[in-house]
Image 1 (cartoon, helix red, strand yellow):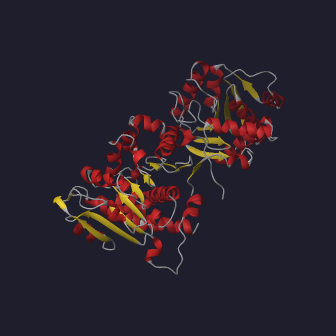
Image 2 (spheres, helix red, strand yellow):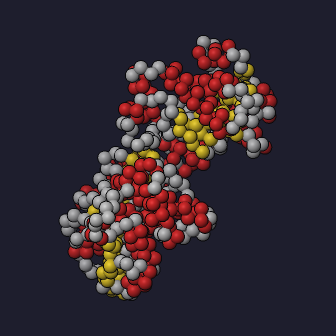
Image 3 (cartoon, one colour):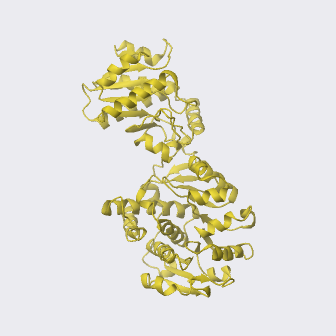
Length: 513
């Protein structure tokens, strides 16, 4: 399987250094990068002979990649204009090779740049890559301002970024105020984390991952990877025809209250639609008939009430409810008081059943100082950014700027698998492994979709997958159903319940390749 790894700046530097030590020269890596960039640009533009491309070159390795790309573009018949925004040595190998071919190299005269941009079909941004660590100023700011102005007045001009759009933080995805919105980012070797952060993705456009010859055995050491269809396919539970319903797991869902009837239904249906053999719902007795009318296939355990739709204190011991079940989901629409009651049992009773904790269950944990020290059990936590902020004791804004690193950090500290929801959902395991969803879809930003996801993950845990694999596959299937629903309905008006019939279709899609 061709696994797509995602790297930090430090990891990429280490890979390049270890590749050089293994005998792949730094110049060879740059040659590979520049050639791959040129080939990708030609492929994306189509017929390139006679087209004009401006290559913006900075002072570092990213600029060197741009110089190599310019040479290969020239060999493909492109009219190349190279603009040096930064100082490069006269002995620069790649610069000398350009001049030997008679390729126009100028800069940093901004009037010349304006002339280049006025007639250009495309621009290659090779100013700064992962090495850029300060805010954009001076001539680089002026170059980017002219690039942005050109794009604003000429929407037909295509902007390609080498590795990253200039000014985009490779780890956090935070852009500089002058970072351009590019059409395509041609990321080198391995994609950078910042490209899978919402702010970074908005600037990066369509991302292409280019092979530059990194050694596979070195790449395998990277612990973060993309949840591709190929990866998701390998995680699907095996379903033999010679089985019974017990073979596909028993899932208990503890959810629902007077105000949140739908949450119980969506969670149960999510678990059932991904193939759980039996799904049971423990909920306030007055809401059971309403939920059962929508999903008669489930088994129901009515809980005594203190008021309509409100579970009576000490209604049932959690260990008793989940006994005999392979997985249990606690939280969707359950309410704060009921969540506090059931989670209080976690500190008292041994619980062999693997858990998925969502919604009010997470908010209950957040109220308990150092809750993880008293909870020695396997669980998946599925917070959205606001819930993650409460669990971690930080602001939601900080959560969004540190999504990947924060999920990894807290998964390790808490000893739980963490699913940090949102665009490019992050799945982090306690042992440091991490997977990132390739999807960002506004159709999933509506009430109830998180309940479906929690049910999907619980259904996969019940079928025997590890928590990390169940969360990864669940995140992929959930996002893919959003894509499928968007195609059928549109990007406005997709309901959480619209995802449910798409789940088996998304699984079949994976099975059929």
